[in-house]
Length: 218
Image (cartoon, rainbow, N blue to C red):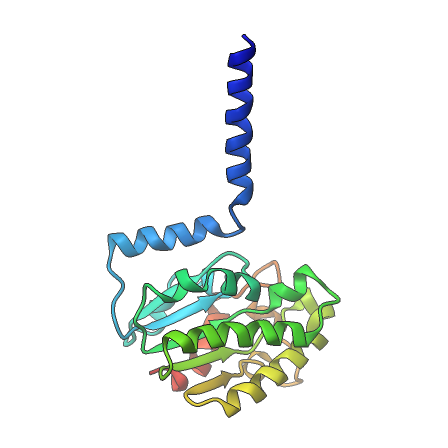
């Protein structure tokens, strides 16, 4: 009886430990791998990488019918997650362009986080991209000012400014600023572009993004 109990406890803790070791969004990455096995990812596509604003844009290809797009937005990911899963997010693909949207969740997790920390996380991921794809176009969409995260806007504004300055100096790189396009005539963020959570976008919100993004897309 003791041997059976010991075996059961060993199995329990082994399973618990193995589950505990899996990082956040691990399953999302496994889903990408499965999708790539079922349908080989096309070459020379535009690869979208980032957080839930991309994750929830499930019909993104219908907004850009003349483009080949691979959407690899996952969960409510942070810049740290992009770095942790960089190999899985980059190696399976041969894109002609990468567009990134990420950063606001870093601040949502830690309200006192400094802008320079998120900027450095982005630079780390950008470097990883360049190690694999030294010459392709790499663009960053500005962190949006969601009404539900108004308290974080100052850090987001500073982060956008610093990343814009960084991208300006880089070859084949652009900062895609969606800020003005999401404002009304008084310079306020249009709440009608957001769903009830005042964080994620409505179809009209994605239409606004589409108009801004199109000129940058290869």
